[in-house]
Each structure stands twice: as C-alpha cells, then as structure tokens.
Image (cartoon, rainbow, N blue to C red; front, side, top):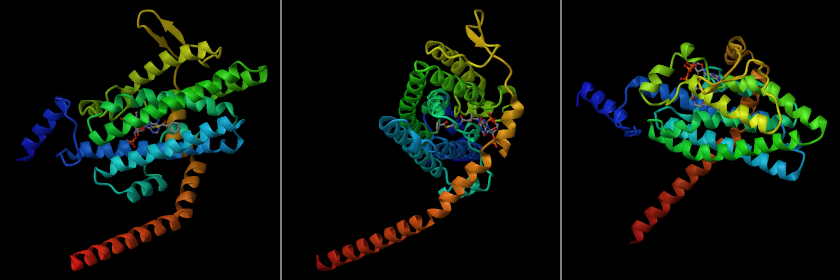
Length: 321
Ligand code: FAQ
C-alpha cells in the first residue's frame, strides 16, 4: 500500500468509528498527539495521588481512612493503565517518567494547589473527580482502542471517587457551623481551579480542532466545562453550599448557566510551573523515583533469574523426553 492508501484506510476507520489499534498504520501527528495526551493524563493520575495522600494519616475515622486509601490506590492504578496504553504507541515508560521529572511534560494544573483541611478531600472528590468524569466518559469512545478501553474502568472508579467526595461535603454541610464553614471554604478554593481543569477556552486551544477531527476528543474544552458547571451548581444547591461566582445565572435562552470570567493568567501561571505547589509536587515524584531504584533493580534481577530458571527447566525437559 502507498502512504496515500494508508491514509485513506485510516480516514475510513475514523469515519466509520472503527478503533485504531497499536499495529494499524496511523499518521505521525496522530501518534504524537496521543502520546502527549495519554502520558500527560498518566502523569496527572500519579501526581494527583499526592494532595490526597497528604490526608491519609489524618482522616477523621477508620472508614474515611480506608476509603481515601482505596481512592489514592485507584489513582496509582489509573496511572499504570495509562502508561501501558501510551507504551503501545512506541514510547517507553522511562522516557515518559524522564519527561515528567525534567518538567518537559505537563500534568493537570489542579494538582498544584494545597490541601489545607479535611474538607479539601471532599472538594477534590466532588469537583476534581467530577470534572475528570465529565472529561473522561467521552474518552471511553476515543478513537485509539487501548486508551478507550483503559477509560472504561477508570470512569467506573472515578464515579465512586466523586460520590465519596460529595458524601464528605454533604456530611460537613449538615454538621456544625464550623464544619459547614470548612466545607464552604473548600468549595471557594477549589471551584475556579476545577473549572480551569478543562483547559484553555476553545479559541485559545491549539489542539482541540484537530483532536476532534481525529475523534480523540469528542467534545471541546468549553463544551465539557459548561456541562460540568450545569450539573455541579445544582449539586451545591442541594447541600446548601454557594458556588463562589457572583455572575452565575441560569440563562433561559441557552438552557445553561452563564458564569464569570476565568482567571486565565492564574491558569497559565500554574501550567508553566509557578503554582503554589508545582515545585513540591515534582520534588515528591523525583524523591519517590530515586528511593524506589532498588525495587526496580530487584524486580529486574528477579525477572532475569526466573527467565534463566525457566529456560534451564525447558532444556532439561527436552533432553529427558
Ligand atoms: N493543566 O489545546 P489544549 C484526574 C495544556 S485526571 C495543565 O486544550 P488538549 C483524575 C495542554 O496539555 C486529570 N495543562 O490541549 C484524578 C496543552 O499543552 P501542550 C487530567 C493543560 O490536549 C482526580 C496546552 O495546555 N485529565 O483528574 C491543562 O487538546 C483526582 C493547550 O491545551 C486528563 O489528562 C490543564 N488543566 O486538551 C486524579 C484527561 N489544560 O501539550 C487524582 C485527558 C490544557 O501542547 C485525583 N486529557 N493544558 O504542551 C484531555 O482531555 C486533554 O488533554 C485536555 C487538554 C482537555 C486536558
């Protein structure tokens, strides 16, 4: 087949919703876009373990501790599925980790904010996982097979994460005055960063148009942001909390909430590495990587030893047969 016919075959697959698999021909830029998005998504999951990991030892009850531990562990698992999906595109895990540690690869802006009180665990589950679900459910139908399949399980788990966060917020909002204040304060601090998680507005998003043509993205950043605001405002009302946006107003004509101006300077500042916790997050990842070197070496040595043993056993078997 010529490059032109490969391209035609690929275009037909996209057009007819036939998923692209690792051994299929694909344009270089499609591969690059996927590696960029999937690896950044994987990095977000493992960096995202840090702000919540901070509260495991201080959870207010054994039940809350078990649930939080399970959630943080799930996020580590999501990172692993995603790194594996990215590896099918021809990049190694070491290369991706190096890109994260050197600051070359991005991870979600949201994880560069501090977790100051227990209510932040509620706000992260409710808002951050809520935003993640809004963004990731459509990714279950993304055009690249391994990414789409990884997303199915991730979304099921995110749904549990969102509910546990909302339940924490509901409990606090129905608690003492101090607890209600703590919940409101967490909502005040996490609302705008959660809205920013969806990325730059469509007019300023360099990748959206092409990613939608390739059906990697099924909705634009602004479409998903609007969907998230529409459902989350109602959830806040239900538990008696106030979304910190004085310009939030139901618009009869559009059937959506209008909302205030997003502080894009803050967003880009965080994305460029200057948010409140960027340096702390990268240092924590680098430290974990360095301190885990002996585990990786031991695992490789064990795998080599097992391989040699299996080869020796096979040889003996064939000699005695
Ligand atoms: N933070 O042209 P676009 C989670 C970058 S997982 C930092 O719009 P695209 C689970 C973007 O990379 C959260 N950077 O790009 C959890 C690009 O930079 P580049 C992560 C951002 O790819 C919960 C540039 O700006 N989710 O939360 C951000 O078409 C709780 C231009 O942007 C995913 O990764 C941002 N917020 O759309 C874990 C989902 N937004 O690469 C623990 C999959 C944009 O050119 C606890 N990813 N940028 O240097 C996506 O859907 C897309 O990649 C977007 C960005 C929507 C994030």
